[in-house]
Length: 170
Ligand SMILES: CC(C)(COP(=O)(O)OP(=O)(O)OC[C@H]1O[C@@H](n2cnc3c(N)ncnc32)[C@H](O)[C@@H]1OP(=O)(O)O)[C@@H](O)C(=O)NCCC(=O)NCCS
Image 1 (tube, protein in one colour):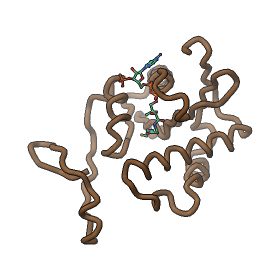
Image 2 (cartoon, helix red, strand yellow):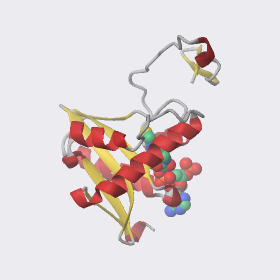
Image 3 (tube, helix red, strand yellow):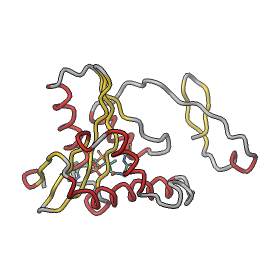
Image 4 (cartoon, helix red, strand yellow):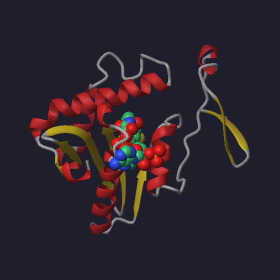
């Protein structure tokens, strides 16, 4: 797998493949939160918003046998950068592509003189958090806390995860 995978900058021709990958990401979030409303009426449109906000220069794709199988993006802010998004086609997961893309990005930002690289998975995405942790994202930065204000929302959340000995739903 490793020899046949190539990573290159995003081209405009890649648009529909990457939009489909964004749809997969949203569907994955729908699945882990058991909530089909995530992403709204057009769940793939998040990719259009991302392109509009950060531009095509912020994206790379991974090709395997001339087929686009993954997309990765980088948002740079001064000497810090954030990986957003990273999505591997579900038929190609667990083959090392995600980690290879992350290592590519770590090398890229290191060469660019970036000091901090972050990634912001949703708290319930344990599978992704494990992979990110294994590759070296082992320091916690900001933590977003929130409260559900609707009674029927509260029971949707799983318990529990602990930070500083405090229990949180996630
Ligand atoms: C998270 C995600 C990007 C990871 O990509 P991936 O390609 O599946 O990840 P990898 O294959 O590199 O790593 C997954 C596992 O495969 C293992 N692996 C690595 N190389 C391998 C190889 N050559 N053959 C088989 N398995 C391999 C890894 O060690 C890892 O196993 P472990 O976690 O049990 O140690 C992917 O699951 C995904 O797109 N998920 C949906 C979208 C998402 O959640 N994105 C993140 C939002 S922040």
